Length: 234
Image 1 (cartoon, one colour):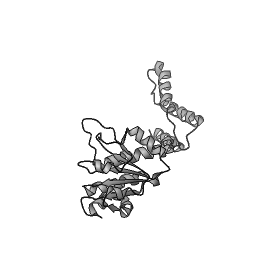
Image 2 (cartoon, helix red, strand yellow):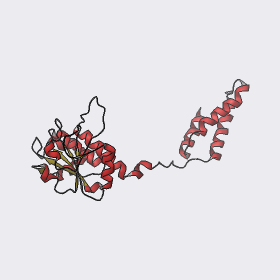
Image 3 (cartoon, helix red, strand yellow):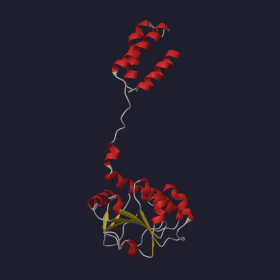
Image 4 (tube, one colour):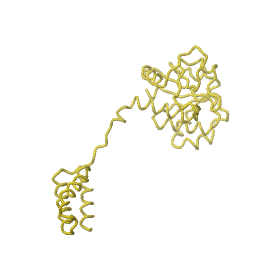
């Protein structure tokens, strides 16, 4: 699905944003970024500079003279808009947009973003199947172009690669309870010699607290060796 999804920037004004957008795509495994009538000449050194590790995406980027030509390769096209349009198109909430993306996962999907200052025009949107909006605070609804892209890329990626978000890192060689108890007996004996458990009537409570501290941890063999060395030195 990621390989079937492409992004189209319509009349982008800042080449730096094009570079940032390419970087956003590569962060989440996307590779197709095209332009419609960018304000500055293309290719552009400023865009390449901000793309960092995504220069390969910019090398494949094509420039089109119209939205109509830019979307010819797609089956379904979505338009990003911050405002409600008086146009006969289905407006999707952001959750509905993601669900629609999943529903059309076997099709070639295009996602359009407009220029930084004004967004997509109604003339651009007529070529799209759906309009969606990224939910933001009403105090400031305008989002930077590359920020919009990274939100969309992340949400699509999150829905496709669910296993990435469910993986728990396996702890390396966690010690068994016997090793932990031997370590605690060692610490207890050393503290006893130093007269740590004072007053004597609080010794039991202090030992419980000490065991609770280490009982909550999942120490590795390496960590246990380090702690044993520290206590030995002390």
